[in-house]
Length: 449
Image 1 (cartoon, one colour):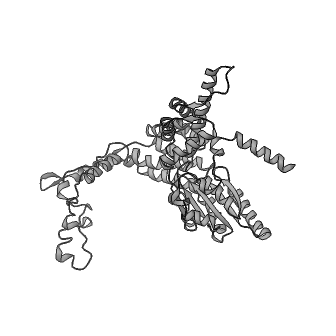
Image 2 (tube, rainbow, N blue to C red):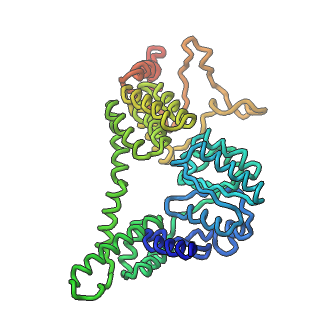
Image 3 (tube, helix red, strand yellow):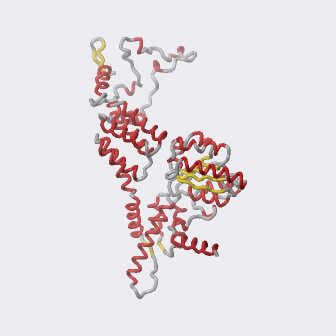
């Protein structure tokens, strides 16, 4: 009887689950997209079917099927699967999972798969806890991440895992998935409407099915209102307008637009030298669950983009805060980020480094790539002198000022000025020094070098 009650409860839960959950594949054959990994004869499929999968990192955009693949591995393997999310789990949870794997192996001779979603949210110290268990094979780690794992996952952990790259779901596969969802929802839609769902999803299967589910509900409500109380069940025909309304409501609900607005407000507040506003927007983002490393990265970029040489220490402070996030983690690392926000907001501002890089790139991309002047070429190897390399080079340290008038660029770029320092903060000293060098009086004749 217990089994019957459990089956009935499971069936009711399945019927009430979101559409994306109801359409979750039950085998590799039902997976939409990722044929390079799970198609017939594909490497990941072969390893799963033979129960030979070792630790892996699944890297792909949201809605590409990382969690789905992990679940299918659990179904196909004889190992026990333990799932954790790096958003909510800590070192204690990981250690408990490892101890459970050790007991399971000893008592049941059964291995363990540890699925760690959002693995990039673990800092270095947290990831290091996994290393011994992964290295000796006590657990098979399946880490899922939307971030570049070469930046976000420790090198020792990456060296012990196989990286599988998942691609965004293609339009044809996504359209097939949407039509499958329409069948499940007992609805219909023309090609234009299906295309609208596909286009709005941008390769994210979960997003497509969530949008479709809301659009079907809107279409059903409209059909019911038109049919009146005496008519039978209305036909649910989803339109492009339903998709547009569903998408707008979903974005508002999930705060996607608001997320980007808050990031913009955060950067502009720090750039605008308002430390209080910068702290407010940073707190808003962190309280909403934003990855602290994302905030740290934005500060590191801002330190060079908007402060630059006006306060060279700004980059040092931002980098130190980013390293603290990796070493300490939240919630304590919020103090380090706040320190950086206040420092950067109060620092003098200059975007001259940004402008200089842009001008240099314009010359390079414009095709101005002349030969290296002979006196600047490498002269350390044998026979370099015989072909004129290094001839005429003047060593700046041989001059009293540690500087000598000398051409350092190809002749075609003579006179092109990329970096023009501002008079803000410490950059004013840089401006004065460069002015003396660029307008050097030699033999009574002033010339631009």
